[in-house]
Image (cartoon, rainbow, N blue to C red; front, side):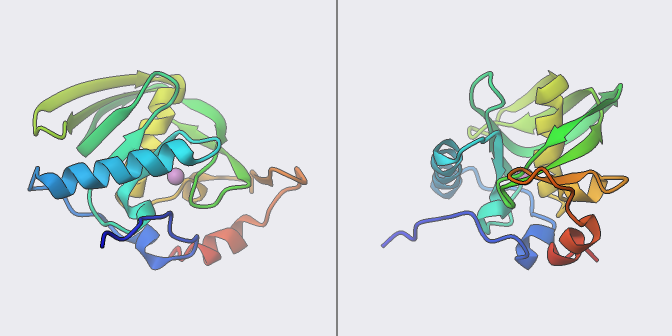
Length: 172
Ligand code: CO
């Protein structure tokens, strides 16, 4: 029987691990991409989901930042430029929003599920998505980038103790 995959809880040490490159472009990879897709599209306020968020330490991401589904395998940021400051959230700890500084433009080298190499570019929100998701593959969370405690509870709109969140997230 196939185990149902789900988003692992905040604080799980796997969220802080570095994921391994994909070397086999096989059925298991297709299955992982399909699992990520299903979980992503079932989630509210979704933008992207990286494999480590479902407990699989592989360099695989599925994202949809408003312009359709993008599958990333072994993605690498080749170039960045500019700067943007804006709100960011994560399916691994829903209910919070942080203000995060990111590059405004990124160029990404990646692979498709058929092992083809592709070059992708993003600006604004799409660039933010690329950076957030690729961070997950390196055990980095958006709260690691927040300065001046700009993390908020979506319900109460109150500021959240960033240091405590970082501690709970297992940041060393
Ligand atoms: Co995230």
